[in-house]
Amino acid sequence: MSSESLTSHLDGDANAALTEYAEKYDLSEREAIEELLRTGLRSHGQDGSQPPHDPDHRALEQRQRSIADQQQHIVRFQKYTVYGGLGWAVVTLATGANGSLWIALGMAVIVLMASSTFIWQYIPIFQ
Image (cartoon, rainbow, N blue to C red; front, side, top):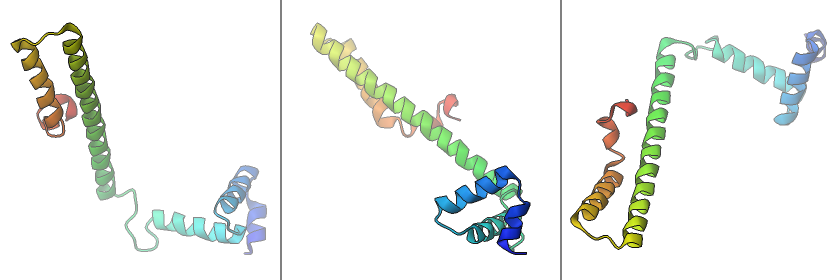
């Protein structure tokens, strides 16, 4: 079947999507059809490769999402500790406070900033 006859059998939306795909990747409609067909066959494991819907692939994707979520939490925690440290410094300078409580608070913020890439293992919200 030629690509012209195949495109004539597609509905309007599918034909428009095919044309858009071909233009986006600078392909002829025939090349676009072949590439999409190969991609579809590969996704269903017809070419001998592992299909993306098998349990191992899903487990890997889930693990990657979990790691990405943990990284987002870590970055958020780092931002809060940096802002806390800056706030502490501004308040300390503005008030002229230099007592042992202020020093202890400042050291706590510094420790939190330094340990923020490791502390996620011990705080339940990062699990």
